[in-house]
Length: 178
Ligand code: ZN
Image (cartoon, rainbow, N blue to C red; front, side, top):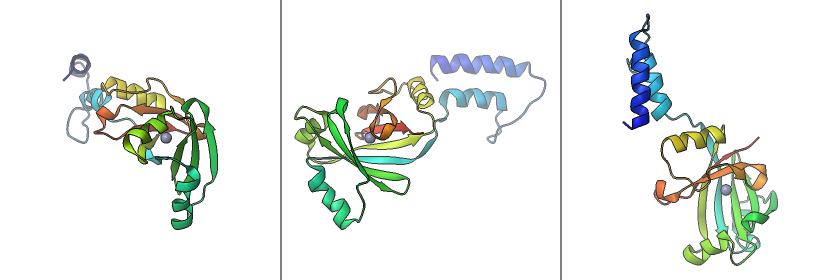
């Protein structure tokens, strides 16, 4: 238990010892202790579903043919995200979508990704209910982040990336949409 956890635990223990009535959590732990423990270690991040899978491609026109002609998906829109030097094609599937990412500059992050690792799945994005809360929670748990604060992603989403060292090699994005 970390220092912060210990302090919270002791504070709650004190409060609990002077509390007149006892309630128990589903694990038969006094509720006040359980809630304090959960607030430090529990998962409050509400992941709703996979928002999208980001696929790095050399050409949306070329790679898009597999998704449209073979899988029968539709490219709903193509958006330029200037600060990421990327064009993003959206191919929705129920609550999720495939996003094809095509670099607009040879020094863009997607171009660099393809240079070192080739075309392919570049990141997985999980939709969360509240990205500010999710980032706060990740920081409290000491999870290394690429983005300390949410930034604007394609399709008007608020997004942030978790460091791949924390996720066993998967670049994980969390995102919130209206
Ligand atoms: Zn993404």
